[in-house]
Structure formats: structure tokens, C-alpha cells
Amino acid sequence: MAITRALGQTMARLADWEVGALTHRVDEMHHAGPAPGDRVDTALRMLDDLSDGFEALMVYVWRRHLAAAVSRIMALDPDDDLNTTELTVGFADIVSFTALSNDLSRQRIGDLVELFESRCADVVAGQRGRVIKSIGDSVLFVNDDPIRAYDTAEGIINVIGRDSRMPDVRLGLATGGVVMRLGDVFGPPVNMAARLTAVARRNRIIVDAAMASLLPPDQFETRRLPARPVRGFGLVEPVAVRRH
Image (tube, rainbow, N blue to C red; front, top):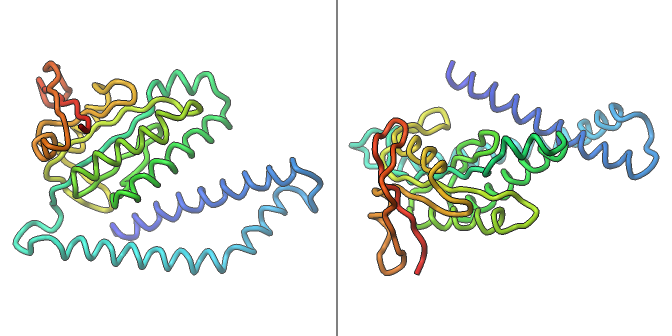
């Protein structure tokens, strides 16, 4: 039942994503000049033309991700809980997204979120991490290497926060034991990373003490910030980090 539910939810989102991408392309084609038939006919023809190749691609990608997931499980200690592992969790969050969305058209908001998600995904993949999910104006990712997780956060700032056409971002990172279930992750590091994004300044990275302790002092400079109340954790001393 759990796999059936996950399959339905994943395929529903994939179908919406596919149709949304195609309709966007159809609009571009019709704005560029006369096209045979109406927009619905054009979109249906494109779906029909792509279906066979897309189905083969979908199965191929699923098999590759299945092999990667099995490899991650096999790398764990067999005496440990196979659903729990040590990871660094990161949250990337668009600054002032609510106010921003009130000033932008619906089309512009959609384009902005899509560009934000795609750029984050590229950076995460480049550092051998995984995007767990996108939550509107935020992206949740994980990496089993805290240094690569920091490089991911720095990379996201470089491709989004440093781009004058994009909004500023904030990054929160936390390390610890997380529970992996149905493609999602749970546990204190996930909650801590999310809370730290509210503490971080624009285009800055804030980490928890556990992650800071794993960063080599010859490569990184860490600075404890004043303690402040963090919902669900009491008083917390976040740590600002930068490379030497």
C-alpha cells in the first residue's frame, strides 16, 4: 500500500510537470507564429510524439535510481537500523518570497520557482547529494559528506543569490541521525536546518554545532553567533561558517 501510494503521488506530479512543460512550449510556439490547429490539438500531438521515448526514459531513470538507493543501503553497517543514517541536511530558502510573490505576475512566479528549483538541483547533483523535495520557496537536500554539503550551499548562493536577476537566498545546514522513509527524511537535523534558515542573513550559510565540529579547521573558519530561541530546540548557538 505504501509503494502504491508513493507511485501514485510521484506519477501524478510527474504528469502535471510534463503537461505544464509542454503547454508552456505550446504557448511559445503559438506566440511565435501561426501553428496548425488550436493549442490543445498541438499539445496532444506533442504528448503522443513523446510518449514512447519518454516511457523508455522513465524506466531507465527509475532503474538507475533504484540501483543507487540499494547501494546506499548496502553501504550501511548491517548491525545498524537500515532506515537511519548520519547525513547533513540542508535547506535553501528564498528570502521574502511572500512579499515577492505579491509583486510578480503568476507567470513570473512560476518561472522563478522553476528556475530556483532547477539551479538548486544542478548544484546538489554536482556535489553528489540528493534533493529530497521542493516546498514552494524552499529546497531540502541531503549529503553524506558535510564538506560537500557546505559546497552545495555555497554553490546555491553563487548561482542564485549572486545573480542580480534572482532573489536572495538563505541556507541552513545541520548534521545528525535522520530517518529515511518513503523517499523523505525525518529527525532533529531536518527540523534544525529548516529553523536555521530563519536565522541566516541574506546569501549566508548558518550551520549547527554538530556540523561545525566536522569541518576541518585548516579549511574553514567558524564563528558562534549569540544564542537565540529556536522553536522546538530552546536556546541555540548557530554557527557562521566560511572558507579560509
